Picture: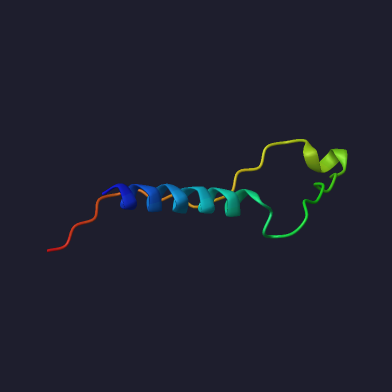
Length: 55
């Protein structure tokens, strides 16, 4: 039981380190958009609602 706990803790630490180490490359600054593009509200996406049943 103790070995299982140790293995789980090690795996969690390894995943946390890999997730935060920048494996996708060096960090990049965000592109500054012109002022006109920054103003306003934009809503995009997909929404669904209803009832689903199999007969």
